[in-house]
Image (cartoon, rainbow, N blue to C red; front, side, top):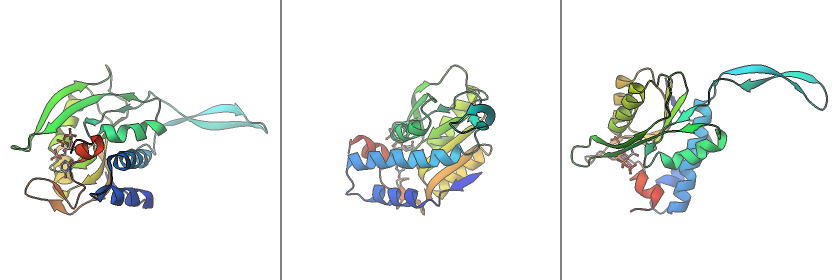
Length: 207
Ligand code: PRP
Ligand code: URA
């Protein structure tokens, strides 16, 4: 399943992020807020069970979340910029990490760190990464999560290129994908057009 947001707040925040004059502090805040809004959509069908509660007025049966806490696995670095926002609506989640950067010559992903909770099978896993460009990083990150037992994975990104979306849906057809905006194409350097530039550099101020 591919979901492309039609939320006005998501559209507005992404437009602010695209502006090359947006400063690091604002960019970082917007990345967290878009992450939160996309995660809310991705978590829409979390399982519930009914409990008894006494309100100030009456007895009632009310729904509460059931099951094990979800796991957030940001793709470092830039995925971390969305994680704070997601944790605001999911403060009880576990957080794993996959460190990966794009080799600018081969464009292929280089893994430099992996740390996941001991047991992830059967748990809802959210993988945030702001940019889905060629799809190489997302495919490799999800390959690793599956190799550790992950089997209920939802990928969320702020901007996707058609090329990356195609690669990810082909490699992992069982993974639901939540996108803030689907852009036009990749350029010859495999950057998303119009995009927002290098998301990691803009989140961490390393330009
Ligand atoms: C960016 C982005 C993705 C990747 C997308 O990370 O956060 O992980 O590029 O490109 P792809 O779809 O072609 O793989 P980057 O490699 O710049 O590392 P960083 O997050 O550490 O800045
Ligand atoms: N990574 C980014 O940060 N931006 C792009 O446009 C492509 C990959």
